Length: 236
Image (cartoon, rainbow, N blue to C red):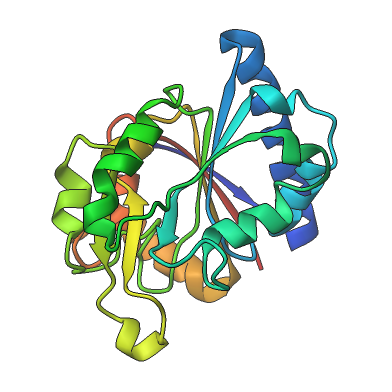
């Protein structure tokens, strides 16, 4: 089982303060140790305040690589693109000087874009200094969705990235075609920070931690991995 440290906070502001401080220290330590630091980022509302805080810090951004955990296979200016979110939060102010490695490329489909994305991500220092993950109410993390087309490949391939089709898009109206980090890539992180909020998601996290079929709740593959170090951040 992974090494799991749970950090529960009374408020989202308290969570943001702790997350921001630890991210800053991880980036500074990564540069001191290796000359560069690598931050793998997720979208969503939970990390946004920490990203904005980091963007205002006078870190050695020219030696920091920022890359995405997952991306919808849409144009990089699309309003559902995670790249748009990252550029509008983290890659502002001082953070604009970071080296951003895009996950999207010109391939028509995510499946066709795997080789080019893999080549770009292979250039990143490993282990990654920090990988930030979120979690959906269905127990997905990154874009590893329950019973999705491509899930098994995402859990088993040694590659860093893979294509996934999210099968619940007919309910959410979301984009189905995605690129995502694989379990193998997530495991190549010094630390994984899992961000969750609210009682509903806390219950989902506890159910995933209790064990069961990874196909039903892919987060279980992360929590059960023997070498991953996870810090769970939760606030109401």
